[in-house]
Image (cartoon, rainbow, N blue to C red; front, side, top):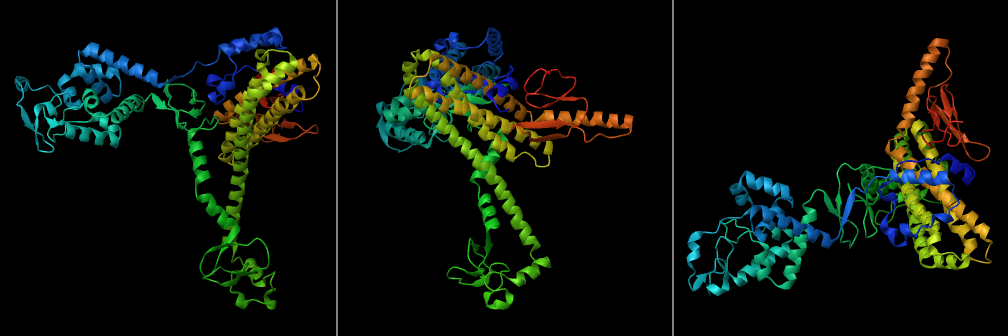
Length: 597
């Protein structure tokens, strides 16, 4: 695929899109609203527009709700009001019940009406002793400090265990400083399980402790709810309520952070959470350091300290306090070496021992470590490069939206609303960089013995990179022509608009197909091999000859620089655009949805 037209023809298909169009709100400030779109400026025919509309109608609905702190408070108040109405309880009692049953109103009602006494005992809602209603003496003894105080300076929960105000304040203050456990606070009396409600806390503690308590109470709605989580972005105060059964775990928070609901790491399609966990651990683990040491150093024969040699002769002197002198090749003492062993740059002892197989195991381990390190470095460098490219693209997008879009509007005498296609192109670049980054983690853990899958994966990845580079170059360099120098004619800008919008649509479609294929484990490769193998064997039995291995795909470079694939088996046709091998029964390519010619 050497041109944009090739790629456009190859991947013009309607397909399932990501939740929320795959865009993160990390660039929501620069994302134009729907009412800004002026479709009259796009040079697309009516049929293309109809396809876009039908595709949008099949987009999955949002599977989550972003909750602000005000939203959470309203939900808490609504839940408390519901429990108060149904159970005829006070707000304090309703709050205690809801916290115990993880803010589930239905669970509270079910458990309460099933066995009210058991629920009261569990949560600490004991009935107030009726004998205490006759009044209190003028002075009481505090059960904590054992000093006598006037009854006006004493407080008690529903259990009527009285303690002085100072002891209450100290008791509650300590519990609040200890963390969210203060929400399940009980009476200080060791023999009493009466719950301490919010009203008692708000009555006694200072403003600072009240603020902390309210904060714990607010966060308990999310942290006790299996369907809700806080956004993991630093400083973000939004929560997410997720609908179970959704096909995608990708969440786009209003703060701009794009993350995975399941593992709370950054959004990582097309790889699964387990692969992400392994990859992140590998990037931070000491195992790669040990691999590097094993591959690039040798231990001192005396003190076993690893030593790296990058130049010079074979005479090595270990650092103090060891100072042992030895030969780098055979690790023998240098005192036993000299001209008769090969001088300073050779060692015939090593060569003789090597021929005898003395160093075979050590060399094998060192070679394995070196190969493992080189393979990891290959994937990690490209993973990190795409991450930095994504960050740079996001920075360029923000710069373009803040400064360049106004300049372009002035130079082309067009409103900003008609330049939406530029913003959409940059948004797609940022998203595709993220996807491409995680394909390298996918490739690292793809089994090396699955040659067919690996070849197909590398082909898809290469096409994705080539298509993204075309889009990136068009959005970056081709756009610069209309920002700098003389103003080109209007028809040139219209051609640029059509080209950039077309590349954006094509690249988006290709990456959606790529994500779907990788998330399915490249199952099409297995299906093709199995089907081709069965056809090949039956054909072989019928004719008495074999025409090659079933389903074998050969990927190479064609003369025009693109990729070519030949299928050895009959009963398969190769797509002219993406070259995927399709079963003859299919009239449309299952990879790019292009009709068979």
